[in-house]
Image (cartoon, rainbow, N blue to C red; front, side, top):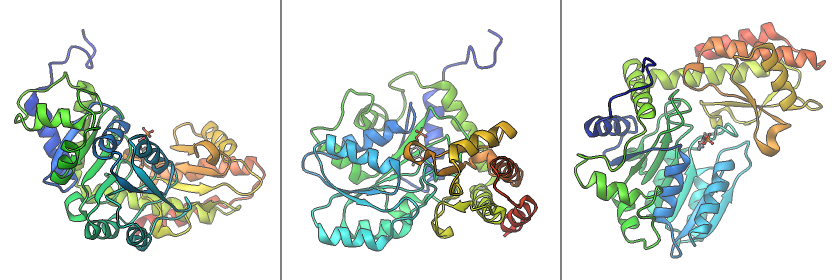
Length: 367
Ligand SMILES: *Cc1c(COP(=O)(O)O)cnc(C)c1O
């Protein structure tokens, strides 16, 4: 076996535990961190099924497609779900959450997505966390699209269940994920007769067989390649510095936004307020009379390397996504994306100003 990916030595329990500890440091938490051997949907679903049940009233905040998915799982667990949906071009405000909690004092669980790569918005989790903590509800956060792109501060924000994946701003693989679990969340799971046990979705299994057993023996063979890749992501972020990595994402987002506005032709940021735009991906509204998926196809034909995609589902006609994930959060990639978009728009008969766009991007990216 000569291929470097083949014939690997087994990943030791000590190494697995050390990767968990590095994820905990990345998230600013002293809580238990469980790394799960699957894409982020695994801990996202496992954490909901572990903590919610027929006695739960959940406030489910919907700022994009993932919030809708969480509502489905919560209802499936038998929880009473109060949806708080905001238009996808905005973020939710802490005041809206405060009002919902005041109207429904029985709420004991709040689910929120930090940043939505699919819609390009980011929510003010620090403020929301303070409101949720004051009310006493369990706070569940999907930080898959925010980790590495902006600060995620689990302990400072009072997050009870924080889920991350490596595949967005961490620049890593999609096959592993992690969740931090507070003592309160563990207690809630232990008391929940419906919490998955002896199941791939079970966090309690990991607690009993791994965390409480002193993390000395892994319950199953770990997904080795993904674990090594996750370790490499963490090493890179630690070497460069998390602040530097998040600053790179913020600059890429600001540059893309400014560049798209300067390009003209009716291209507009999808998220109206720049303060509510996620650093991980910039979403744009295609000019009226054009189709976003057609423009993306033409841009990719002009430059197959640019990280552009059309919005998912119903958004495919109107939304263009510039995914500046990890290694793509650079001025060069932003320039290439704007250039490819300019080519696509020109081909569609939309007049644009590429020189001005590149100048605006450079100026905004430097601030
Ligand atoms: C990307 C993402 C995930 C992971 O889902 P994928 O379908 O694997 O992309 C989960 N939550 C959010 C908010 C995301 O942006």
